[in-house]
Image 1 (cartoon, one colour):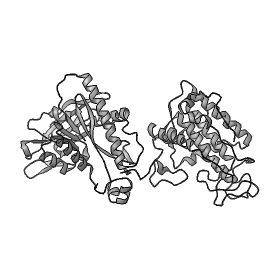
Image 2 (tube, one colour):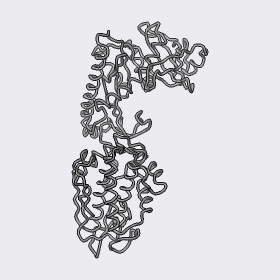
Image 3 (cartoon, helix red, strand yellow):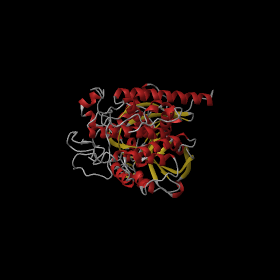
Length: 516
C-alpha cells in the first residue's frame, strides 16, 4: 500500500493527536505482492492472487497468495480489502461534510447497525463499489483520506458525528478507526501472502483512546445491543462488555432505562436549599459475584464482603450518617427502598422521617384489622382535596403537579404519624405514590418538597460527572472503584460548598434532606 503523509504537519487534527502524523499511512504491503482481483471470489478455489483472505488452511506460497483464518474478512479477496477501506473513508467523509454522496439506503442501515450486524452493512456498501484494480484503489484511498483531513480542518467541522447503531464518535476517532482498519486488514493481506506484519502498539493506543473511549463518552446508543454472549475474535466485544470489573453483570440501570451489562452504585445525597452533594456510596455486588469467591478475589473483593441488597446498603449508609451526627430532617428514595419493609421499620425505630416512593399495589393499614392498596385508598379521595403545587425547580422551571395525602390508620413509634402521598400529572393524569412517616402535624407542602428532593440525586450525579470525573474511570478492582468514586465525590462536594458560601455568605444553616 502507498504511504500517505499530510502535506501540512500543523494540521488541526494532528495538533490534537501528534502520534498520528506519521501513522496514516505508514504501512506497506509486502514487496512483490500484487493483489489483483476483479470480482468477488468464493471461499474454495485454487491458490492465486484472487484467493480469499479466510480459510482453515495455514498460509502457503504455492504460486501466489495463500489462505489464512480471519474472522473479520469472511470470503473477501485481497482486492476486496482496500475497497472496503475506501468505503470506510467515504462514509467518514459523508459524516463530516454535508452533500457527500453515499449508496442508497446506507444512512438508514448505518443507524440500525450493531456489532453483530456490521458485516451486513459492509457487504452492502462493498457491493456498490465494484472497482478492483489495485492502482485505481490506491489512488482512490489516497484521495479520500486527503479529502477527509481537509474536511476535518474546516472551521465548521463537527466535534462529534452520528455513527453506527445511533452511537456518536468524535471526529478525531474517525481517523483513529480508519488507521486501525488499515492495520487490521494489512495483517489479513500479509497473512494471505505468507509475509510478516508488525502492528505498532502506539497506534493501537490511539484507537483505544480516540475511538473506543470517544464512543463510550459520546454515547454508544444501540451499538452493543444483543441478547447472548459477545462473539470472540481477534478484537472481542468483551473488552467493552466484560465480566471482570467488580460487580458487573446484565442488570437494569436507570442510566439507559434498560437491562445492560454494567456496574451499579448506591449513593446517599445530602440536599439543602443552598446546594446538594453525594456524601456516601456503595458498590452493589450481585449474588453471581458474592457466590463466587475466586472471582471476588480476582477483583480484590475481601472474603468479609457479603451479599447485600440495595435497601440494606442504603441502611448501612444511613447508619454511618447517624453515627457521624450528620444533621438532617427527612430521608427519601425511590420504589426500591419504599417497597422494602425492613428499611421502613428500621427508619421508624430510629425516628428517621421519610417519604419513599412505592408501587400502586402497596398495601397500608386502613383500619384496626384491615389494609388497602394505596391506589384504592387515593381513589376514594374527593376531587376537591387535591392541591396544585411545585415540588421544586427542574431544568425547565418549577415541577408542578396535583398532590393529596391520606393518613395511615395505625400507630407509630415516638408518637409519629404516617401518610400515603399521591402525585398526579397535570397533563396526563398519571399517578405516583409515596409512603410517609414523620412528626405529627406535618404539612402537605413539607411532604411534597421532600418527595421532590429525589431529583437532587440526578443533579448531584451531573455535577460530579461533569466537574469531578465521577464516571471517568477504567479499572476493574473493587478497592479502585471506591478510591475513585470517593475522591470524585469529595471534589464535587468541595465545589458545591464553595459555590454555596460565595452565594450566601453569613446565611443561617439550612434544613437538610437525605436521598438514596
